Amino acid sequence: DQQVKQNSPSLSVQEGRISILNCDYTNSMFDYFLWYKKYPAEGPTFLISISSIKDKNEDGRFTVFLNKSAKHLSLHIVPSQPGDSAVYFCAASDVGGSNYQLIWGAGTKLIIKP
Amino acid sequence: DGGITQSPKYLFRKEGQNVTLSCEQNLNHDAMYWYRQDPGQGLRLIYYSQIVNDFQKGDIAEGYSVSREKKESFPLTVTSAQKNPTAFYLCASSRQGAKQYFGPGTRLTVT
Image (cartoon, rainbow over all chains, first blue to last red; front, side, top):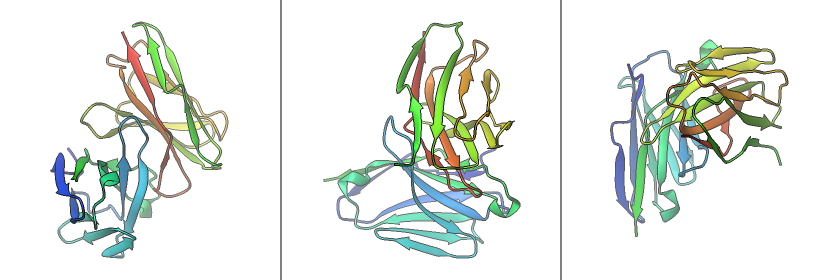
C-alpha cells in the first residue's frame, strides 16, 4: 500500500517553461513533506520542504504547494533549466509524532528540453 | 567540510559472500539510515538508528544486518541470505526531525 504516490514516472518540459511535479499521499497523519532531487549514481539532495501548517513555501525558482484537503502537493520549478533534469522524489513524515522515518514516492524523472 | 561518506563507490562480490558497506558522518546527527534503490524504483528503507547502540528494521531488512557502535558510523552488512543484493545502496543521516542528508551511494554488484 503506497502511502506516497508520484503518478507520473516522467515529465518532459521545454527549457524556460514551468515544470510541475505532483505528489499524492493517503496518510492524514503526515505533517511534513520534502522534495529531493537525484542525479544518476548519486545520493538525493534536499530541495525544499513544507510543514502542514503552511500551504506554500518558496525558495528561489522552487515553490511547493500543499493542499491538505486533497492530500496533494506539487513542486513548481520556474524557469526550468537544463541542470534541473533529474529524478525528483517526494517524501512525507509524521514529525509531530517524533517519527524520524520518511515515506518516499517512486520518483518522477524530469527532462528539460533545450 | 561536513558530510556523509560512503565507501567504496563500486563494490563487486561473488554470490555467497557477506559484504560490509561503510557509512560515516561528521554532521553530529543522531539518526542514521540505510536505503536501497533499484532501477526505476524509489528508496526503500533497510534499517535505521536513532541513537548509538540501537537500531530498527525498515521495510526490507531481511538478509541485512547493521551495527551502531559509534555516533559517526553505521555500517551495513549484506549477507548471503539476501536474495537479490545487487542494487544501489544509500546511507543518510538526520538531526531530530525528518530532513535527511544523503551520502553519494555504493553500487553493489553480486555475481
